[in-house]
Length: 304
Ligand SMILES: NC(=O)c1ccc[n+]([C@@H]2O[C@H](COP(=O)([O-])OP(=O)(O)OC[C@H]3O[C@@H](n4cnc5c(N)ncnc54)[C@H](OP(=O)(O)O)[C@@H]3O)[C@@H](O)[C@H]2O)c1
Image (cartoon, rainbow, N blue to C red; front, side):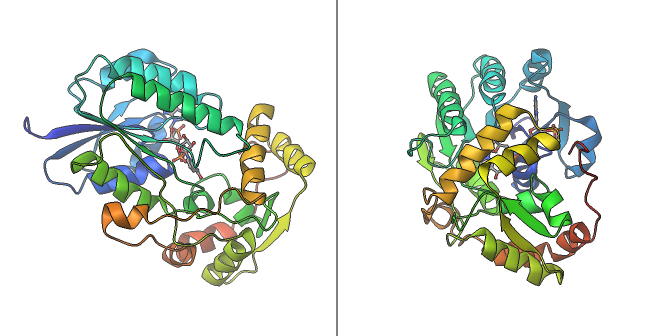
């Protein structure tokens, strides 16, 4: 037990961190320590993974979680909370002789026009660089799992993806492929101080995504383009803060305006496997997606 490499996985109950935990748990010689923010979500973790309480709102939990840790998978909230949360984690991380930090960042944060999320991503990357620990940054575009576990689940419930994406295309990525990259970066040499842009195999539109979801669920799931104003209004109506409504709008607009079409071979170069397509993702999650598509949406005004 003592000779194992202890890896702290933050965001362990979320989309990306959940897959990282599941895959790291299979690696011999690794002891996974899952940082759990909401205790009621602990049941989502693999049984072999040790969970520790962890909230960046309570720095004492963060300090305690780092006890004996050798390496870190760093994920913090993507909104304006990202920089202060990353600061709390890095303050604790700097007290440990860490061997590696793999940080989840954002797609093409230098690309114009810069969205607020790009600036937050660069600010948090700088905090990691400052620590002087070997780092790997992963800058993926949108995750497919937003439709099963994330932001877009209520739209699958409504059988209508209503967003201001227009015909904008992006290399939507499966978090299982992202996690496979994280595992390599944390357990194999040669990924130190590298930046990767993992993408799915093709730049696809929301119309194509809706078609894949329709095939997987047997329901007719459509895509409806919203205006920017309608998007902000819809976000505020479900209780999202204004700063978040505008930050996601800026990110979606970049995709709509053709700034997220880049496709790379980073997943295959690092993992040896081609990334899964959105069609693969929808097929693999057909049962879950069908359950979501058959669930009545939350009433208007209900918090999500
Ligand atoms: N989603 C995408 O399409 C996408 C694409 C590219 C990059 N990213 C980046 O991915 C990150 C978000 O990860 P995700 O997409 O996997 O989101 P997610 O599924 O919402 O997971 C976020 C995780 O962070 C935890 N968390 C939230 N607040 C916390 C706090 N104060 N202290 C400690 N843990 C906290 C959550 O726990 P609870 O659920 O218990 O609150 C959850 O486990 C962001 O940095 C974002 O920029 C996301």
